[in-house]
Image (cartoon, rainbow, N blue to C red; front, side):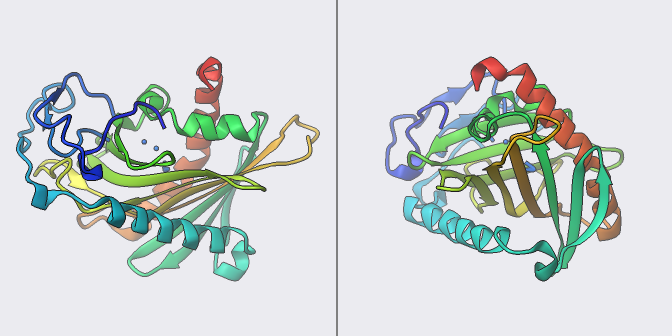
Length: 272
């Protein structure tokens, strides 16, 4: 899954004490320095001061990370194969062939989008792995980077989102996994609590409860589409943002995000 960093959390200290220069940072789904690394923040946010030392007590164990993402993956697969309406989702928008569904959950809401594309399922999955390209196609992302690999299909990522209107910038630290099942490619992630990338006072650390893509091959339709993508995003954006405002904003931005994603696949087609 991208650069083969050896993660401090995987009980290797070979990168300890190094520095990431000119760091670039993944969806709602689609990141910065491994535990034990000093994080150079001069490029991403000029006025930020971030902690630069880490101890073993601040790290997560490999077992904890694998257990966390396995539970998230299991829950996602249980739900994604059911009728959305039976799960409580209601369709709130259809725009540019993108369906957006919402359901209320404790502490917020869960957003589902359903859309098709002309790219093969394996290329869509490959595109999701290009985390270092995220800021080149997603205008809302400032930095996106893989921190380290936990296993062949599990990794830790950091994403910094730009300021939007009056909202302070948000960032997320997640563990993600991508699997190729018999009927689909699946890409799932969830937030982790860690000082791998310390929180700062001017950036709000958002929490991704679940972000997932279910990518299926379908018979070619009249528009040339051969892949069906279903995504689910459940997050807490932090601070005192009114749920209704965030819900409406996320709903209206989803078709635009899908278009940006498809445009990104066209742009980086030779890397998929």
